[in-house]
Image (cartoon, rainbow over all chains, first blue to last red; front, side):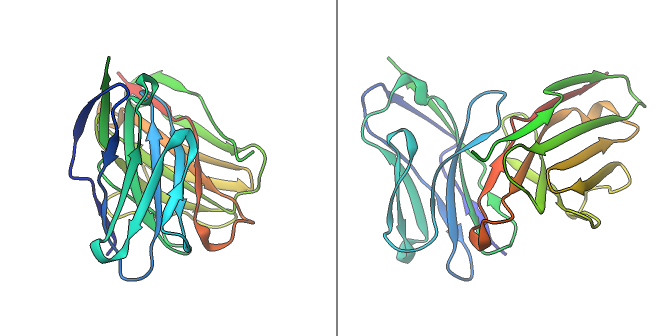
Length: 112
Length: 118
């Protein structure tokens, strides 16, 4: 069965600092990978996705993620965090027409 | 493009009553829609997969007689919480998969519905 692990429940970074959110997945075949962001009381917004090809994926709001098959990871990065990036971030895995499985989320706090 | 709406955005009801939540894909057709439940500070839990014109597929542990799902058109799915109780209070989120999107599985999410049962 597919699964997603986000080992960090909560992360605090200073505004302007770099960010990396970790995501590890388990899937029997080539996965489709996603990162979503959720602001309080809101739905989910897709930041970026990986299906195939270049393993470094660029997304919206200056985010990027790198797919590393050997490590079963799909970590999300941003070189300089803004206060508006404070939110909950979810990594997800799915493939083809199968259902998508979400990780437990990482809550990002940004301090001035 | 790819906008999904939910109505209502929040609802408060008395215990024992039924509540209907609508999920609409506004600018695309969605053969498949998904209903999730999210408890505070937790991840999304898939409740059921809704396919247009057929019965929904429920995840293990989800009571299909309590959470009635109807997907009567390519742009509308509804979730009815029947005989709601306080433990049904939660944030319900729907998503829709673009029928023309192929196997890439991208889901577009609605803004969610906050249900509070008194």
